[in-house]
Image (cartoon, rainbow, N blue to C red; front, side, top):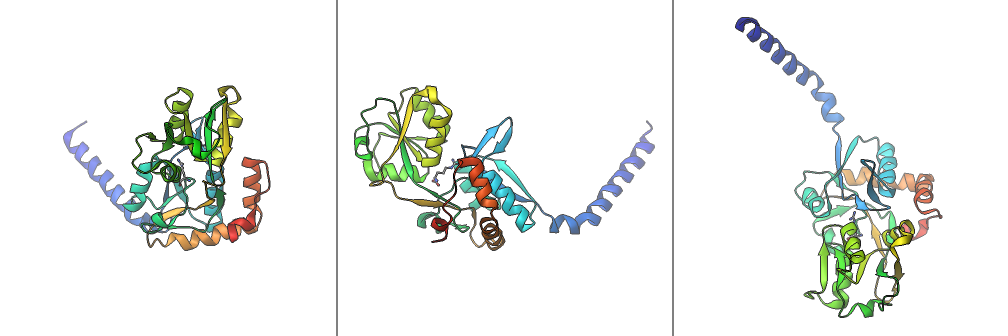
Amino acid sequence: MKKGMMATLIFILMFALVGCGSSTEKTATTEKKITVVTDAAFAPFEYMDKGEIVGFDVDLLKAVMKEAGLAYELKNIGWDPLFAAIQGKTADMAVSGITINDDRKQTYDFSIPYFESTHMILVKEGSSIKSAKDLQGKVVGVQNGTTGQEAVEKILGKENQNIKKFENTVVAIMDLLNGGVEAVVTDNAVANEYVKNNPDAKIVAFEDPEHFESEFYGFMFPKGSELKQKVDEALKKVIENGTYTEIYKKWFGTEPNIESLQQ
Ligand code: ARG
């Protein structure tokens, strides 16, 4: 191809691109996709299945965003990066079984609650650990930066070197299987899901209501986000119109206790 022709072609191409950009600008801003981030290693809330992010949270997000009429993209970026992304506003929203608590509320905004949770202790079958008190003197695994870590710190002390912090809950449970830790403390639905799906792993899960309080999950936003109100309204509708119950039954096989969310 001759140089002159090439230059003309490039010129035309640039012109087309610039023209295209300006004509779609309006629709592009009104239909801007919302970036939602997650840590997809927390079944049944969010996990990877054949290259796709699936789970209770993923279905609920889909229903809520449909109700709100919002286009979005869900990205699996991991737990610690998720908080950084919301704080730095490189993401608009996080959905990840995130517990609403006073500490986080200072830095982030949360939706209305959508799930009630508590903590459970996972141990190998036949373990001498039968209650939260028995965790004393034992090496205990938690996912770093979770309310599970906080719960264990309350029992063992904040600086306790026996608390082993993992990047995600899957690797914490793997370490339990390998004997690196003697117990893992995580959210009850996640603990139950692991036991149910891995009958051969010989892992058992139990609660300790005396030491573990009930907490609630919410969608998380940067502080002052305008999205919160839209998402709250849509989430309310999805809870009221039965869609929430359908999704809940699909993942947990039982009826949800909607009143506990509305208290
Ligand atoms: N609910 C706990 C918390 O907010 C654990 C959530 C972990 N979620 C996850 N996708 N890894 O601290």
